[in-house]
Image (cartoon, rainbow, N blue to C red; front, side, top):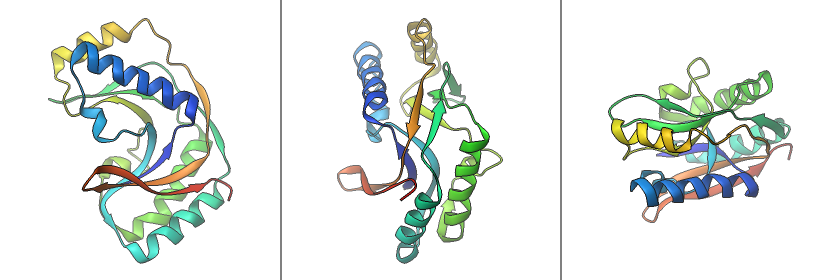
Length: 178
């Protein structure tokens, strides 16, 4: 699996990791640790054509100016193993950046995840996935419900996260605006 993401800046990455640690200690959920880098995902696929990938990533990053995003509350993607996340407010600026990335990488992606298509994409910061069941989700939401997740922070990079023998690793990073 390959993910095209923006890594969160230090302050908000630390806040997210603190929540991950709390949920692991209190609810014994550790599935998020598969992707140990707090991020916003733009696109994911089984693989990309490697000769073209890095040039397209670099070109897309240069064409996107650093942007400020806002988050709000908590939400979940439903199913037998729900995903708990902090929603990112989908502004015109965020949508335009996503479309630029989507168009640059779609021609070289193989088995791109449909939920990352422009018409379906829900930008977010994941707090838990893979090992949360429905009763645990309810308990976690109750535990976190009094907290405020209304944040505002910059997105400044485009990164490639790849599955490796040592887990998911950041294998490339390009700054927005060059």
